[in-house]
Each structure stands twice: as structure tokens, then as C-alpha cells.
Length: 137
Image (cartoon, rainbow, N blue to C red; front, side, top):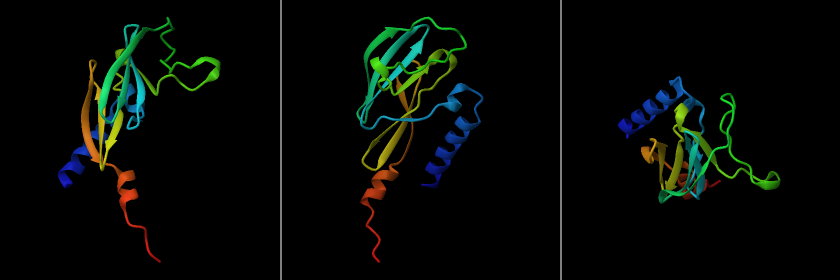
């Protein structure tokens, strides 16, 4: 258990100390399903991810933009919610971290340019809290 915790802490320290855009990315929880867009050289692949994994569901060409404009989640018509839970620009090193949970285990995965690869597993704290006996007065 201590070795597992040490590995998790080392990975997190590496991500936090890295001098790259990946440092600023939030982990998207895809346990109940999410849509991720990974973009490279103007072509974006749309992934659907859930606790069973990630699969390609489509693609699109990016609209031309200036170099200083970051990739943003596309908005649905009439100001609706973002069409994607996360948009990652692979050309600048985005790792597109996601988390999926099954039972008492969660897996954090990152995009390697072709697919989502598992990086580490952690305990599903929410699941453990739900299973814990309630305190008795």
C-alpha cells in the first residue's frame, strides 16, 4: 500500500512541477460518460469515454483561429452547455487527463496521441464514503 501511495504522489508531483500546459489541465470525471475532443493539426477526434473505456465517435475540422486563441469547448446553439467536457490541443502537449471509476477503484488515464492509456489507479473515495457505516451517537 505504501509503495502504491508513493508512486501516486510521485506522478502527481511530476505533473504539478512540469513546465507544460498539461500542468494546468483538470482531470475530467468520465465515470458516467463524457465527450472529449483531441485536436492536432486542425483535425479533431471526438471520443466518448465512460467506465468501460474510450471509443471514437466522430471527428471534425477546426475553424481557423489565431495562435494566441486557446482551444475552447464548442458551445451548443443558443448558449447551451459545452458540446465537449474537455478539448485538448495535442500539438502543444495537452495530455487530456480523465478519470473513470468502477466500484472502489478509479483509474486516471492520459491521451498518448493515439489512445487513452491508464496512468494510475486510486481508491474511489466517494464509493468508500457511501459504504462506510454511519456514526452512531
